[in-house]
Length: 512
Image (cartoon, rainbow, N blue to C red; front, side, top):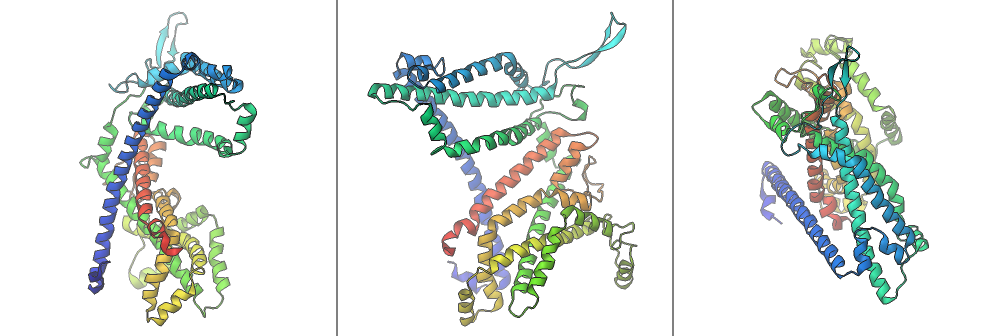
């Protein structure tokens, strides 16, 4: 413990805490990528070990085991596991048929110009003069997006088949060893019993994993690959084929000298500032409100809680649309030139609320409205946690002469952060992707002449800018994909680093 720290002034202690935070965050950031590097190395080490095991099993296996490396399931059928062997044979036949008749063609076109740059596909759709009919006819060419989709699906089919193939060859060698020692292998009844007993988790998770693969992994991988193309409205199928462009989209986005690069850095900065303000204002004001309601001597506690909880029952989009109309400068009761309340405020304080006109004013209003929506949730959560803090801790602190502020910072806040640390991380990531508040309240406005003209405005977050790029006139899918990748990287990196550094992980033993 640094005892000299407690001899510093409050300002010096604050500076020490801030510097320690950034120091630890920097260490965690570096450590995060070190762990990723080690995980990648470990992955390839395991692949090498698997290849070695595969070669050993093939070399030391008998003729039936070696034949099973070519005909999956042959060893299973000959050594008693008939149903499992038939399934393996069916998978091998289906894989070969799929790749020959369908997947191989799309996979070849998908990777044909991947490293050299070029079209995704071979023949473009175009009009030609039909001599027989005497009219212009359309020659339908390749569909770049379908090549993308089927090529990625074929990649996953290959990965799935390799996993099944490795499993089948390993089992073939194990069956050979069972045959040598005279041990009877597990039959169909034993496999079914195992799937309903010690492997029941596999049975339950099979269907959800299929859904996760189809509706999450495949779209995510497709988005990642689109970021390396020039896919936009001008290249939408079947009009034209789009091309591989490598890291050109990333280079354009990160370039600080271009208007696009300046827009990205400004939108990214506001996104992070918004996420911090939206998360901690709602959290701390909700905590303070819960502490005020829970104080001894406060009457009508149930009424106060009911009133704040009632605000949660109102759908969020309804509250946001109403507040947007109320703040509207053109005639909202809180907007400039609006109702009598606003006119009185303007006459007394000589201040005109410029929501939707001035960027900073609009941002402040958005944060305040978000507090109105978010504080009741935090208050409700914190009320339950505060009731579980042992009163003995507070009594001991009072006997020792601790002030209310010291009791808050030494007892209440550490306990709250320990319990709600994962919740805060979730809220922070949710606010980075908080589409509803920004889009329904301000639509991303007001406009900013300094920003890139393709959809970005003064209060847009990365997620709302991504939405406008995807559904705008130009439908800039390539740039939207790059932004989607960056949002994922920022969210995942921050979540893992902060969670591992939080008291919920490091201080777990202190609250047992």
